[in-house]
Amino acid sequence: MNITNRLGLPEALVAAVQNDPYDPGDADISITRLLAPPKQVALMKQHADELTEDVADRIWALRSQGLHCVLERAADENELAEIRWNVTCLGWKVSGKLDLVTLKSGVLTDWKDTSVWSIKDALDPTTKGKVEWEQQVNLLAYFGKRNDHPIKAVQVVAFGRDWRKNEKLRFGDDYPDHEVSVIPLPLWSTERAQLFLEQRVTLHRQSQAGAPPECTPEERWEQPTTYAVMSKGRKSATRLYQDRALAEQHAANQPNLEVKVRPGKSPRCQQYCAAMPFCAQGQAIVAATQDSA
Figure 1: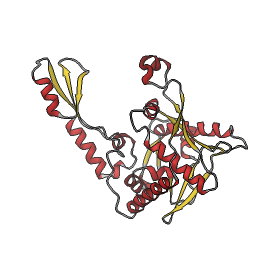
Figure 2: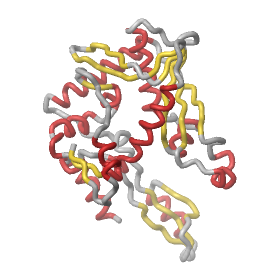
Figure 3: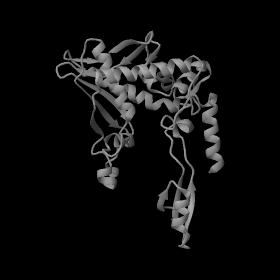
Figure 4: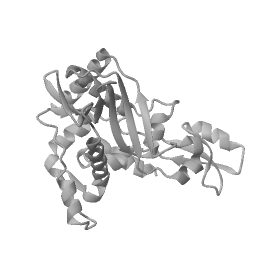
């Protein structure tokens, strides 16, 4: 990975980013990479010497590392903190670094420095929540059992880095109550965790062997195209549809209404994937989005 400094930030900040202490050991893959799209991981590995990222785009990582360092200092002899566990699966060595396990209760805690809206999604009982958080903590729990530390419960403690009191007043119940939220997650059976681990390892092995699957809509964080029925001259929609015909039918008999297309997006491809310069799928999706805008 090549680090740039387009903003001319202080060299100390550049050095802090370049001296990232992350070390997966001698594992074939980490849990973090295992949960990432196989195509993305394969392309990043293939083009590792060509990847570029700017210091300004790594500040979130520095902030997260700082949080973990401070919390690690608080652990005592009754807890395990920042320990790396390894498990061999289908011939691959997989590593996972736990944040905290309280030995007496058997509770595994993962710290997240994240956005308020990620916390909101995780707390929303009407959705699936943050699926990748549940997958991560359950793989770690499985690794704990394989390393003689049975886990009885899993949770995420999420810190909303963009939490604001005035936003809480504005959005009310549709906004986290505090800057930090404790989010209990379901604990999987050993069988379910093992099967999931095997499925992910199989996907990544195939991908790195030269047959990467296309990234799925879920992996791309796809937002579908919608059709907004709007009063002419206004910016907010009266109603949103995913079916153009229904939107046009709604607006047909009311001369003050019109339909505007809001093109779908794949935010991960457009903003958050370092492999984009080498990904024909991602480039095609972004080009199609721009053409329809």
